[in-house]
Length: 397
Image (tube, rainbow, N blue to C red):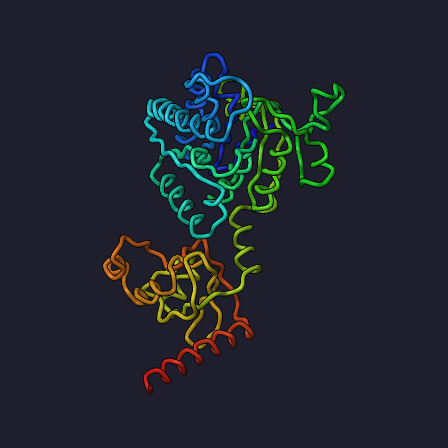
């Protein structure tokens, strides 16, 4: 098999608990040090790596000398609280030897599903990557309000991958890929090196077993694959027990590659372009139109007026003064703040808002150029006319 990492720049690596923690001896430092060398080599070559790491609860159980077997919710939370510190400290030490800073990010499901929190998490992760740091991400198990279920970090890793527009998601586990049947149950099961798309037949091949430390199974990995590949992120499942597990993938050792449908950016652009109800409109000047058509973000200086009621993360239409559509995208500001900064240079935006603000009204990654659409333009023209009429009526009263 060829080097499956080739051509992928932004990579999310998910690490299962059983790879990191031994029930008797604790943290598997030698293995983690080899992974740290892999990460340093890849980042040195221009790639961006994010790590979604299990192991906090398993490590906490070891440090707190908890008995084997199921734990109550509060015991899981206590184990996570202790284990997370040990885990983060170890990552920081190992990556720090290679001159890499580590950023700890603890997420809940709400952070990946509630739009405003999703955008905040996305911005934080993007900033860490831009600064050359390695985000180490885990679910925030210490404040979980429902039972902590196995396999969540497989799905969390997929959500993170789609959040940051990753090219590739790697699930390092105790299995070396997908088989036609669970190999522990069927000695005749055959390894599948490539999956074009996740069909019901592929889903039927997944088993559901997980160990005490590693709560996931192949089913959760396939679920993760559906999330990732549907958003334009390819996925690899491979065994991670060997030292230098990312180098092993480059050498072509056994793995299963799940192909993505398009690229992360094209999938996101399709979603913005075709599946959104517009919450408002930004009317821009011709200078902004020229900037947008050349691939730049929409800055406040180019916005002439703001219409509608919308929140940060809502879809907005971008038009000329005559209502003709220029683009559509995701708003980086609430309508109220957008009105305050419309027409201002970037240097004046923070002062106008009273806080350190983002430069773009709509970032280029969240924006799709479009041809004029008469129906949409008419709706915007009506919206603007109604607002002007209401404003005139208010002034007259």
